[in-house]
Length: 229
Image 1 (tube, rainbow, N blue to C red):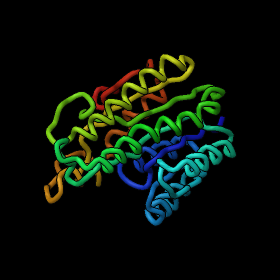
Image 2 (spheres, rainbow, N blue to C red):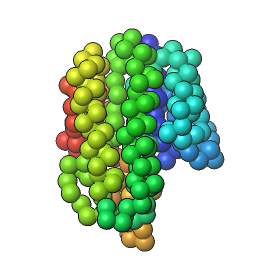
Image 3 (cartoon, rainbow, N blue to C red):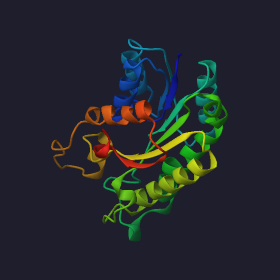
Image 4 (tube, rainbow, N blue to C red):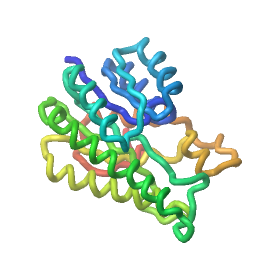
């Protein structure tokens, strides 16, 4: 049976790595990113492995989310939604005392409101899937207090809580919030501009652990990728 995953922020980093992992396992993909050129390059590589629909746009845009849902429906319906697209709100992320409110609003729109809104659109498809699941990419900043990470961390904490509530409301689905750990990604570099982050593992290293969620289907909840086997 063909399975379809919708992945946001899939032109680079963990989103792209997970998309490749799913493609190798035979999943069809609907992917998005804000930068059309990067998304086109990613889609070109992924299309060698599976059927890919790539739609450039911003997850905070209502019409763009509707396009993603419609694309998944044309492929037979989504079985998995991965809410991966994120923003820090600044580089480096600003302290709360000086966090520009428009940037803070954008941080919550991208990291919380957009994932909830896209989930709402895809729930009718996920509910009829034999293995419907939502994977929300979280962070240790959602549970630990780090100076400079107040906006991003608060948004991820809100996403964690929304995930937990959705799991209660949709018991037939699996809803996972996963902290992937610090990875060597552009987002991590933006958090530490000018610093050497080569000691962080590549995002590809955690993909096998994320795929175990789909294979073993543990109970809905919050997980740390490094603890998955």
